[in-house]
Length: 224
Ligand code: SF4
Image (tube, rainbow, N blue to C red; front, side):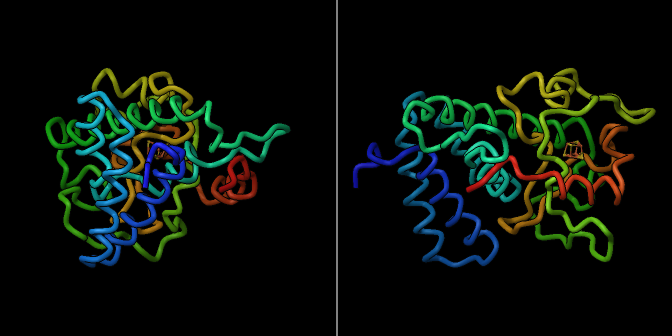
């Protein structure tokens, strides 16, 4: 199959589907299939630096493949106009957005390891092990509240963010930000968590159950 005949959106979604299945229910055949599609996806990128970041970020068990499917690579349907993410002229832009996203993810992942305590920064230790996520709370970790273009980047008292976090949080660094880059996914499952939950910005800390209800009612910008 000539992967050049396939749109980047198609290639990403095929890989993302297989990789999420493989992460959530580890299985050798699934992993082989995911690896084949991963190679086809990587073949679309010609700069060594781009391939390098994609190789490191996309297979990471916390990379939010499912959220990118629902945002960057989802058609926009909830406005007066429609944006088809399989349009050929959008291919280069979407490829670039994917690279930028993976770079941000790797940077945040590294910051958590080196500048904070990865065992206590969020609801589970971020060490690549399947620690149980919290349960029995009103938040079901759907991640929709973090499908946003930015938040006021005010840290809680006593916490100092690295300088580049301000742009990531405010939505001023990534082009066309539709999702907070601090949102991580849990091993391919449709569950998402804030990677900096215990030090997240004040505006995120005050988001409550009623805000959640309204946000779910208002969603609808993206289709498939
Ligand atoms: S900082 Fe955390 S809670 Fe706030 S929008 Fe980003 S992922 Fe969501």
